[in-house]
Image (cartoon, rainbow, N blue to C red; front, side, top):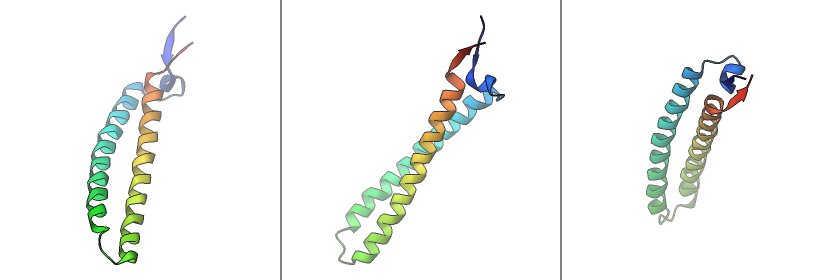
Amino acid sequence: MQYVSLAEALGFDPAAMWTLAWTLFVVRVVLGFAVGIDDVVNSFRSLDTDAKKHQAQARSIRRANNVVTALHVAMLAAFALAALYIPV
């Protein structure tokens, strides 16, 4: 019995999947750090009395968090495709 990665079974290049997974990891960490810093800065701005301005900034942070979450899911999927082995 021989084992192949799930990526190979689906016709993907396993080396390319590892490259994609690590690239998404680095992008996710950098973007997550930037969004986290922006979230902290926005929390200091929340002391401002202009509620509409604060809500607009919070909305953009939520969108950025959604992007980071999507990158995280894509990264995990790429790692799973590259790492899992199935018998052939």
